[in-house]
Amino acid sequence: MSKNSSINMWSKNASLNGGTLTLCGIPAAQLAKDFGTPTFFLDEDAYRARALAWQNGLNSQFGTHAGTIYYAAKSFICTAVAQWIADIGIGIDVCTWGELAVALAGGINPKKIEVHGNNKSVAEIDRAVSVGVKTIVMDSLFEIERVAAAANKHGVRQGVMLRLTPGIEAHTHEKISTAHEDVKFGFSIASGAAWVAVEALANYPQLELRGVHCHIGSQIFGAEAHEIATDRLIGFMAKYRDQYGTELPELDLGGGFGIAYIDGDDTVEPADVLPQIHTAVKKACAQHNLEIPMVSLEPGRNIVGPTMFTLYEVGTVKDVVIDGGKVRKYVSVDGGMSDNARTALYDAEYTAVIAQRASSAPLALTRVVGKHCETGDIIIKEIQLPSDIAPGDLLATPATGAYGRSMASNYNHVPRPPVVAVKDGKARVIVRRENEADLLSLDVKE
Image (tube, rainbow, N blue to C red; front, top):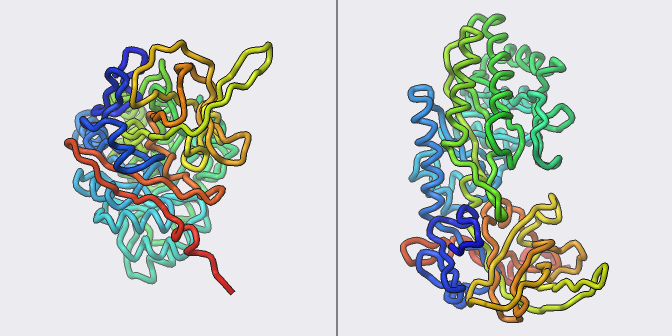
C-alpha cells in the first residue's frame, strides 16, 4: 500500500503500487473491465482470516469458557459468505426472516444461529423455533409470550437470552449507540425492567434462560465501554443467582469494535481488547463469587468492513467556487448514496484513491459525489485528490464491506451493484448486479 494510505483500511491482499490498485494480483482496471462499476470487491482470504482471528483470540483468552463468535449478518450477508461461516465454524447473529433464510441456505447449523431484533414477528419467531436455532434474544415482554407459544407449538424447550441495557453512553455516533437508556433495544437494568423480564420468563417452563446479552453500539475503540458493560451484566447475573439459586451459564457482550475508514484511524484487532475483557470478566466474577460463564461476542463490521472496497468510474468533474473564492472540485462517480448511505446517515468519513494510474499533479480540494438527484448524495465530503482527475478514471474507496451493499437501495431506480469475491488471483460474482428486469419485477400491471 502507498505510504500515504493507512494499510489497515485495505484488505491484506490489496496493494497500491505505481498508482495501480490490485487485489490478489488482479489490477483494478482488469476488475472494472470484467465486472463493471460500481462493484464491491471482497477479499475472501482476508474475511476468513479476520473471522478466525476473533474465534481463535476468544479461545486463547477464555479457554474452556470461550463461547462463540457470532458474525453480525446485518453488516453484510449472502449465501456465499454464509457458506464461508459454516466452513470456518463460527456462528451468526440474524435479526430478520431474510437473514435467517440466507444463513440456512448457506448451510449454517441452526445450533450456531442467534436471533436478534426488537420487533420479531410471530412468523419470524415460529420459523426460528421450528428450525432449531440455538438462542433467541428477548427484547420485550411480548416476545417472551410469543417465543413460549412457538416452543409449545413445536414441542421444544427454546434457549433464550435477555438483551439488557446497561446504561452506557458509548463514545460513538448517536444513531449507532445502543446501550444508553433512551433507546428501543433491550430491558433496562437501572429502571428494573430487566428484572421484570426475568420474573416473566420464570412463568414459562418451555423457555430456558441461558444468560444475558448487551450491545453497546458501533465504531467503539478500546475496551473500556465493554469492561463497564461486563461489570454491570455480571452484577445482574449475581442477582439472578441469589434469587433463583442457579447461575446463568452464558454472557454475550455483543460487538461494535471499530475499524479504520480514513488515514489516522486504527482497526481494533482481537488482541487489542480481548485481554482486557477477559480480565474484566474474571474480576467481576470473583467479586460476586460466580463461576466464569461462557463468553461470546458479535463482531460484524470488524470482520467484513476492512475486507472489501468499492470501485467506481468517474463520470464528470466540475470546479465550483465556494466561500472565500476557493475552488472545490466535484468528482461525480457512477454510484453514490444507493451503494453507500453511511455518509448521508451518519456523517461517515471515507477516503479514496485513483486506482488505475499514477499522478504527479498537484492535489486539489475535492468532494466525491454520486449520480442521484440529492444534494446530500455525497460519498466523501472533503479529500485531497490529484487535480488532473478526469472522466474515465477509476476511484476506489476502502473499508466498504460493512453496511455498503447491505444498506444499498434502488433510489432513482439505480440497480444495486454486485459483490465479487477475489481469492488466489481469481474473481467470481457472489451477488450479481441487478438489471432492468429486476427493477421491473415487482411492478404489477393492470
